[in-house]
Image 1 (cartoon, one colour):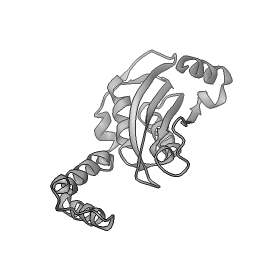
Image 2 (image 1 turned 90 degrees about the vertical axis):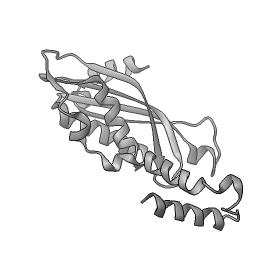
Image 3 (image 1 turned 90 degrees about the horizontal axis):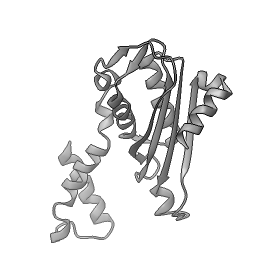
Image 4 (image 1 turned 180 degrees about the vertical axis):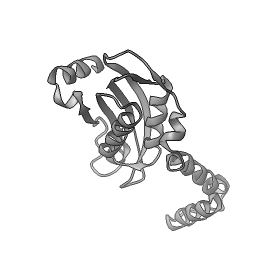
Length: 183
């Protein structure tokens, strides 16, 4: 697969008017292919594999919040990165998820060609599925290079997306507590 991707990158470099055989570009197709495979590794992972049984019984029934999980993803429209942070909260109902699993879930879905709105929903639904929580909230704040490097070229723009499930959707007070805690 790497060789196939590398050949396509070689063709792209050539089509752009560059010489793929010049010293600085000779190994670029293979490096770019490996980078693209890494940036899209989430296609070869599953939620079950990522969680790996790290759901534990707990009497905790108050909000659990993990904030500032960094993320890097690829805009599916231009194949340019968007970079940001994710905040996840949930209301446990007898089960809690191992802390590192939140970052692993974020990475799994972020390492696919995405739009931020769908990424936010996928993370929320995954946490809900794994924990069976009474509610899940996810907010992502990101900067999109497709908007910064091309098109309108707005360097200081960012996007915020949110998904509220269960108690975070039905209770204004719970939603407000979450939003206060992340700001």
